[in-house]
Image 1: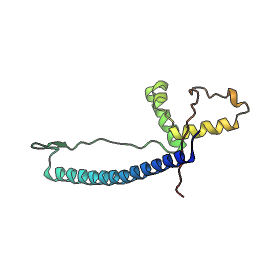
Image 2: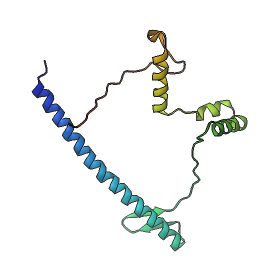
Image 3: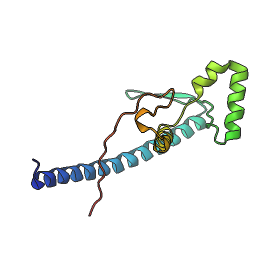
Image 4: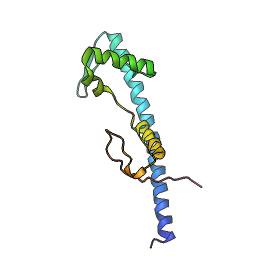
Length: 142
């Protein structure tokens, strides 16, 4: 049997650990912002110096590189146009390889379908592995 004292002690440890994590996360976010700021400054300095790379003796090399980035299609029309193009240009197998589903959206859809299922014991969605039960903990300060 677990005593209330044991539970209280563990909740206190959990709460303290979460507070420590949040404090470190804030520091990490601030450090990330500083790194991004310095990165932007160095890129600008390389551009002004009209060089693509620079070696800082005893420290390392920085290099300015370029690449094109696109966002994923957002609307159904854009998704249809994109996958129609990929199917026509590269084939169905390639199109399927690029078809992904967001983890959270997939689980939300699965749970919705499961709730609507008449026979939950035999409910399956073709192409998906059997679900695994995930137990989580919710914490709210008093």
